[in-house]
Length: 350
Image 1 (cartoon, rainbow, N blue to C red):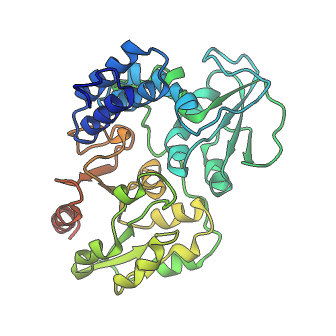
Image 2: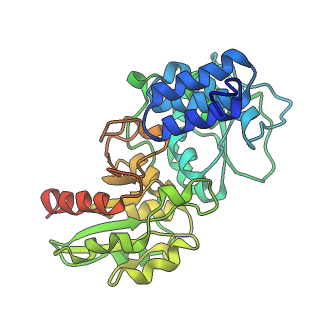
Image 3: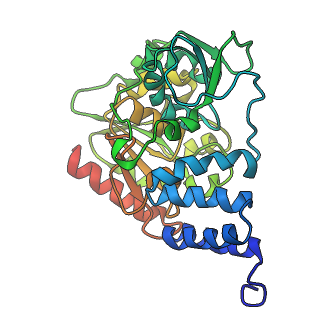
């Protein structure tokens, strides 16, 4: 098709996606650029180019281009009468920062809230109810409002994921002073009781699935049974923090694993549990982001074609210094990932 119809934009975009999923970010960018050269206002080409730029670590161009999400996806801008913040000093004005997309996205970009507060304004933060108590630990927020509740007056606003562009974030300037969140007291003493145990035993948390309704979850999530090799490790006690159907129903495939999920009513409770673990092993989920934001050790298990925020050819994480990334050596190869995890636990924790 590409040979017969060189201007077939959707075919070229699909080719760019193939390049991106194979880790050839520069080839993907060049392919999306071809479409944009022929049709400068093509939303999908711009959007996918933004994701490829971010994957390649070109934050200077990638984050400004990320604004194409409002035209290329189902995400809708908020219809506020107050203007978008332009990044200039607030000089006493009140700004609303509103979380967007998933819980993990909100946790990752909440780090910018203190930077906004330093611009001399009053900061109101709107977030999913599951994050309200946790975000109270930011300390710089005048008021936190759960999504869906009435908002107080404000002078300007900014979506969370527009903040990196507003602050001119580059690879060298990613704000990563972890921890930037802290664990409040859990609502249930049972969390601490469940995590108590003999000395000398390592406590490791497990999460194997993300939000099943999210596009691409089948790629980023593994199965509980894939974690089975970890149950044979000596001097280790395993805890499940897995929530959500259908993933949570797989817990029976992991004999001996203690289920903490029913004790966690919100992400603040989950944070309290993570704070008592020696390590969290998780696929790319909000729980992994939470551990990173808390400055706790977390090993994030990544699909071969991982999300843009994990970059390429790196095992560290600029956004979360305490996070180690373990990527599939080949598409779908969770066994290879678990082999690395098991060896890593034996060498570094036991």
